Length: 212
Ligand SMILES: [Zn+2]
Ligand SMILES: [Zn+2]
Image 1 (cartoon, rainbow, N blue to C red):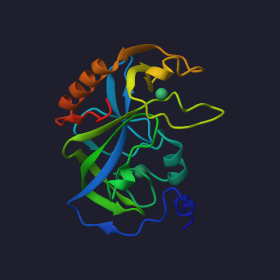
Image 2: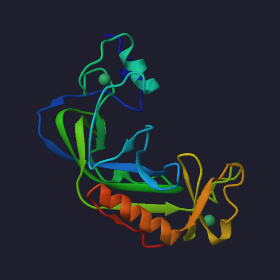
Image 3: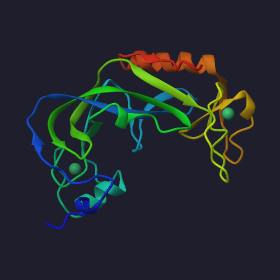
């Protein structure tokens, strides 16, 4: 079968179907602002919000280019399906789920449930449930310059937000981001309080980073 997934190094081949049950896996998420600047738990690589502790997958070919590519004329089906990309993903080790640099990231353990597939680096299943406290990293975006990108590990003092994105800044980078529209801001203590409140709605907790 000519399946575009097989040629995609980002996803790799699917090796086997795992029997229904629960497996421990690890995820990273972005915290992203709603219209009033309050944090939501967003998928790291999809435009999707986790509004509850458990998220159940639905295949929606209209949602992402990758689903359309993989499905290409096939019928809609219950997630996860062989040859498609639907399902909730989790990495097999916490190291793979580590945060990715500047911005605001959350990471933690999930239980993947339902029918599932093994992927190259973890699982994709019918649903996933946040299982335990979430770690939070807040890294200044001021070093992420377009022409000379570096990492800034200064303690963030303020969190700005644009559409769906937070921009934490340290005291040396209060004017960042320079070329991106900012719609609002709050100090770091208020942001951490809002993040703790979000965690409570997800029936978990968020551990503030040691540097803040
Ligand atoms: Zn699908
Ligand atoms: Zn900085």
